[in-house]
Image (cartoon, rainbow, N blue to C red):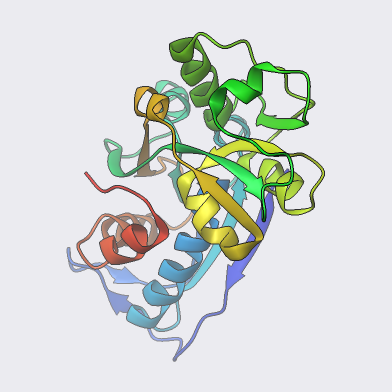
Length: 248
């Protein structure tokens, strides 16, 4: 499931200049991991403010699904993945214009509804048949990270549901449909007081690197390069740190 978000453009229709002297204008379409929804939303506004007349359009979803869409010819300018594996799939098909750059890192936390009604105490609870648990599907980055965590801990998880991206998993928690889930630390932060987060030591075994790159068949290659430069710049780091990401 994809969530398409348009960040409203501001200013005039005049093009602005990229660092290499090329003019930045038009629309830049960014395919990004669901866990980047809040941070990229904020950075999109900043990017538009820095480049009047430019519009940022997002498609957020599971990195694995986004990678397949790019490979199949979906028009996009930038890909930001929650795992190197999915970026490499796109790169292997010749769809990446320049070498991907790791711009943030993320790790899992246990998320429980406010008040912890299921009385979850830690990762070992995921090996029980009750209460109810949710995980990401194994083919998406948050699911692959969870699998590595459980392998490290020697736990066979007993999820009641597996969802196609981390936001869908988090929704199960916020609605009280499950008693606990594994999501990224940044998603716990984004949920505010709707959920409570629990750190656990095994999360260190499955830290996800997030690479970003402009795409080889980008309809707006100049804006793609400028956007990647922006999200990998020092200006972007405070937004990521505030959201709970680690930066390289």
